[in-house]
Image 1 (cartoon, rainbow, N blue to C red):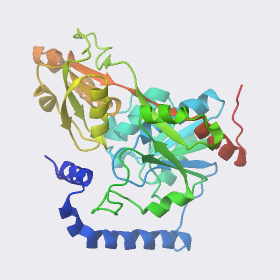
Image 2: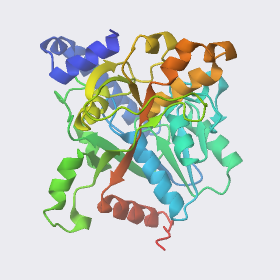
Image 3: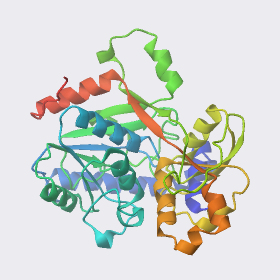
Length: 364
């Protein structure tokens, strides 16, 4: 078990030994406060893009549903006549090959798994680089007609000025001990929420219950939830004969290398599967050998993990892809996609924010 997994589990149960790290959290808090002050006073310079920038991030470590939210917003804006682009630091990619434009043929090992997923689902123009200024310049050079840029997970990147900030909060997970890293899983103190638009990621049943209250949609809390879609085979286009999809009540291996894998496991359990959970660190690079050890039962992965596992297959040598062991593995791999569903108040707020920036959303 990795150190990341051990610490993540300790945060989840609020293990007492974490309080021994409190002095480190105090030092971390001092450093982030000083850093913000340096940017605020201009002692550290920040970059203003030539077009509006919307930053979407979180103040916690671990998954909050940010990537599905970005995909949902991109598709909404595309459908309403806005020329949208996305940038990311490209975590998990090869920074030596950045800045780089992301295409549907880009390898996750080069541009990162989340950028690969975002582009494969939405087709949005996207560039990656740890230096967000370079990412924006690369993106605008290739797509000069963009009206808005969404910065994926750049909330703490104060070298980039922003016009809109959305912070995603996992309402079910909460803030744990409400302590900064490493005692807790906060990247910034809770006071950071005061200056941004906060989107609360809730469970579908919570949202349905609140909808029955009949409140005015525009005054409702800004919420989102994730809806699972239909399972599909990972190698659908490869011509490999696929086993039948796992059915409700059947036992499955749930393999996940995302920020908060427990949400994925819970979703599968809610769908009626008997889940054998295999959590891995976020952005984990799987190997064929690791996946082969989960024999017999079907293997279900997230869309984010699927882009990396699919790349394994595409990069495999021909003779490897034709072995009976490989084909047996490929026939048992399934993907559970999810879609972000936003409350009407989220779209209303977004439209109003864009209007102040001179961007009009086509509501036809």
